[in-house]
Length: 100
Image 1 (spheres, helix red, strand yellow):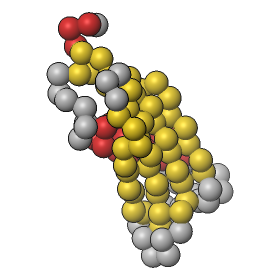
Image 2: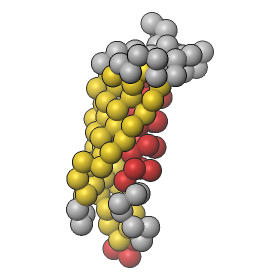
Image 3: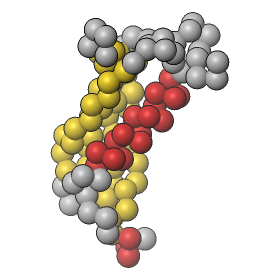
């Protein structure tokens, strides 16, 4: 499978891509549309692995949002056991489009 690594769990790059997309959606709940979001940092912690067919719950929350910076935390848990398997923290820079 394309999304599976050599030990049979979901590829870490796929998890990071999902974390980034969820983080952007979460940040957009507090950052106005007239500001562009730029990903400054994405930190991932791979605590355990998820099999390809496992159902995973993803929860994101805004940790801090200011005039120029927004920080989002993301948690991935197995649906069956609610075991925490991955965490992510994304830092976004918010700048008005006109300033680009």
